[in-house]
Image (cartoon, rainbow, N blue to C red; front, side, top):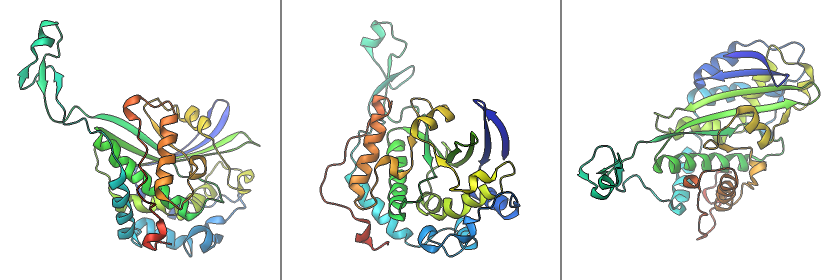
Length: 304
């Protein structure tokens, strides 16, 4: 669960959690590090955290965040209607066995000489979403990115991929050359995405501004240097190097790095698609821009 080690000559405070319940239990029983003077998990105001207390954030994580969930799903459904992609899973393809021979492939000596239809063998893909973000990031930006991630999971699965969803936090303190790294596997490749389960971690500010702040305040090997701002966000190159991401892994950094404005969802998802396409992404993962039909505003659904 917690490990303290060195990487590239720098100290790393590392947490790994396999469920939200495991995370909650750890936070409820963890002791505050006495040398850490920050207490933002308790003192953060409603405007910053969107909750009235740390206890409220714990309850939302434990029992589910239900406020405006139906409106969020309505927003996602509207967004999904604009997304066009090529689903190649139902096309005919060659394999070792099948329903009919491919005479041309057989004569050419190919071992894949039988024709098949239906679902191809699905590939695994890892989607890494940075949960940490700047203090100036608005709840509207957080919300839009969360809805986009839910849609992206569906797009990838419709394209024939099984998605592992990592909600991670990677921050650093340049003064003392140390990293804070926490990884939550919120969805495994053999699981269907559960929007209700993912709603609070992906769309609510208190996931980081109450819960993760508490985790840092209780970290055994953290120093008081971290209490001034709770660390610096790592940029995309730092993240890819630190996590050893492969070309087929998709990184979704904080909303500010993506250019998300939290106003028009179509603009925001196109910025996410542009970011994915501009990275070293294989051609079969390139995502087309969504055609502008009309703006989709978060305020249309009176969520905020």
